[in-house]
Image 1 (cartoon, helix red, strand yellow):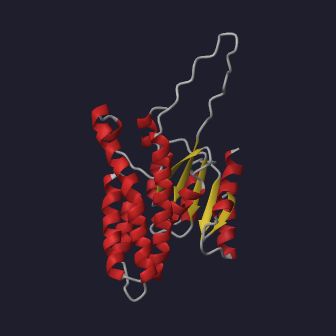
Image 2 (tube, rainbow, N blue to C red):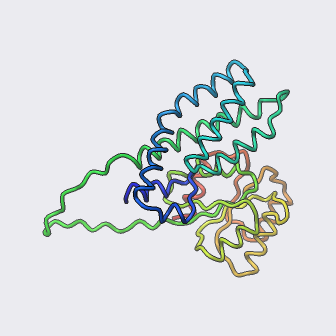
Image 3 (cartoon, rainbow, N blue to C red):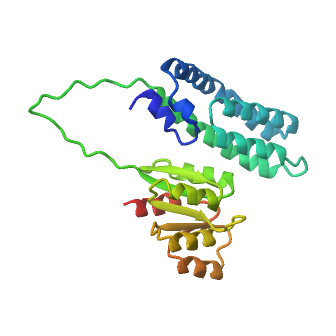
Length: 259
């Protein structure tokens, strides 16, 4: 896989069709932007953590603004939008929620940096095997997992939990978006939040079953009441994940359904 293809497939980065069809010269400029991100990320992370440790709110907000701008330049749109949302809702009298988010943000950027570094490492050319010693390798089939949650933060946590599994995560924020995706893309597992506006997860699941979709559904909820569980089972739930997300538990349950 080429460096361009590896970068285009990094889950945290969002690319329009224009990016996918741009010239090599144009993409080389973007690679320079990614390299700059790798160079400046450690200092930005340190600024955020220092501001939290000293409870310097002004420096914290300044660092968050700078981080949001950097994330936008490297096409990490979801992370960028969530950062902006946290900035807009910041409460100086109650900063602890933002502190918890910043730890997540730093971990996400570190993970993103690792993916970028792996993509930019020059690939080693392997000498061809002798015709009498050919090794046939079965191609690995990457399966699609659709994650539906109106909380972008939870979607980020979910993506981080399953990043090492052989699957592609397609994320959206509403039942309407999920239906549009399911009518265009083959999905192997659906992870569905129960509590969403307009069309909640249970309503979406019933709609999918009525339309003939038999895709396994894992329900994601922070409110696992007995009534909720009964309703989920009634529309064919394959499993449940209770918030807050436990990464090992999530990975284990998704892996089981992908087998």
